[in-house]
Length: 198
Ligand SMILES: *[C@@H]1O[C@H](CO)[C@@H](O)[C@H](O)[C@H]1NC(C)=O
Ligand SMILES: *[C@@H]1O[C@H](CO)[C@@H](O)[C@H](O)[C@H]1NC(C)=O
Ligand SMILES: *[C@@H]1O[C@H](CO)[C@@H](O)[C@H](O)[C@H]1NC(C)=O
Image (cartoon, rainbow, N blue to C red; front, side, top):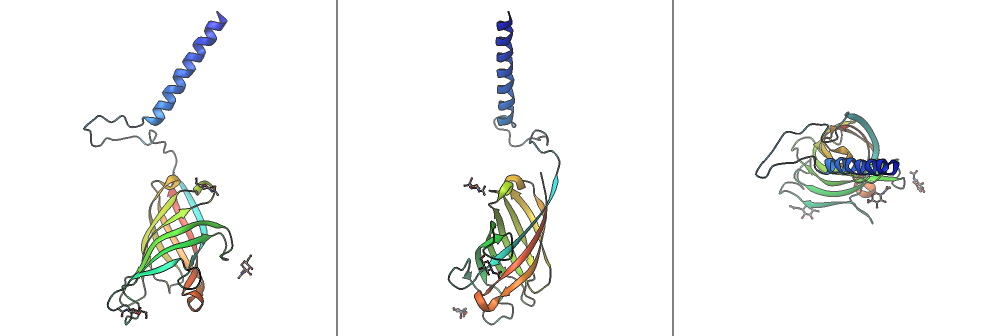
């Protein structure tokens, strides 16, 4: 009798486990030929929204032995323009914990920036922060904004993200830490990022 009960208990808990597992895998039982449907936030596992503050240094290196930023295009007026209007640079810049390039790498900034202001230097930034550290490893944040590099503080919107940063929104504040224009054509920039995510 007792053995039977244990057996039933085991079967029941197995069924429960299967139900729980399958409910995780089948959050969207969508009918065939159905294009969209409404889902609840619980169903998607979205509980409370968090606000995170990230802090790191961005290393832009344009020249030298190990550049991480490369000019891929320019306009007919780039060379004669005061703002180098029309140049496009593709980057894979290191993001580190401290201002020293040898400090711990927490991710990379991958994407591009382009001179998009004829009169006052303003870069169009279109890039992803690809994090490689801790709980953010493998997650990304997408930045799309204007970077007036000669201003003390520049603010750029975070327009989305992936991984732990799904549904992300927020802003990044940049301030120049070191101008390396003479050394390698680049700069070290301090970033403070504030982002809402789940
Ligand atoms: C601009 O200057 C660069 C570097 O001196 C040169 O390689 C490039 O051909 C010039 N571009 C134009 C459009 O003249
Ligand atoms: C950066 O770190 C390296 C290696 O730890 C060190 O040799 C160098 O002096 C540091 N540079 C600065 C500016 O602190
Ligand atoms: C980050 O994730 C990659 C791929 O899963 C893994 O190889 C790496 O060891 C992880 N790094 C850290 C610091 O957890």
